[in-house]
Length: 254
Image (cartoon, helix red, strand yellow):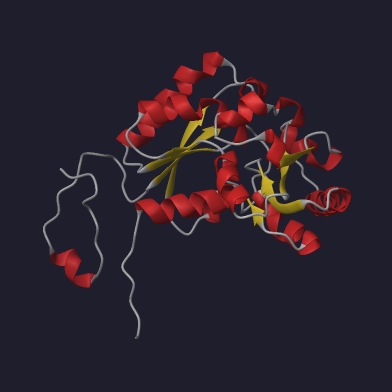
């Protein structure tokens, strides 16, 4: 069967005979590979399903997050297997719920037959195109020490186009970074906004901000209010991908 069949566009479509591939669940276009971590996952977080206006399907992988930061090759098969399982269950695109899944962008994309965007960092080349030639992108990330040109090259980006700012060492970010169950969300919101303002004041060449971490989208609005700059994150990526793989007809007046 054509994998792009299965659309029910209106009430009349509900009366048609339909045929589908065998799957225990349906209706989800976005498959998300998520690391098994315990900490408060607020709306806006990639691994909080209420973040999205459309269904998503998660697949859990279990390892230490430091292994992912380092791009441990031992993780590759587990991650590819997770992507294949999501595709088998009907996902039309694969997302990795941590920016450091970028280490495996090329290998996962080669292993499945749907679009793969393993990291929020995949947006960097597109963001750069929209800036003036002398402007840079502030990248706020969970592990600044893990960022180098070899890492960025896996998503077609250049470190020289960016200002890298670590947030993993912030006290208010520690519950997320180290898996605690209590989070002072007000303090973290204030700290992230203040940090973004500080970096932008020190680097007036910053023209846009990218939040690498899948835990940072809940704070994108306050960061934008504080800096006045465009803010990209995992949610801007996922919404863009979902729009591409689940196109809808337009209705209205003309």
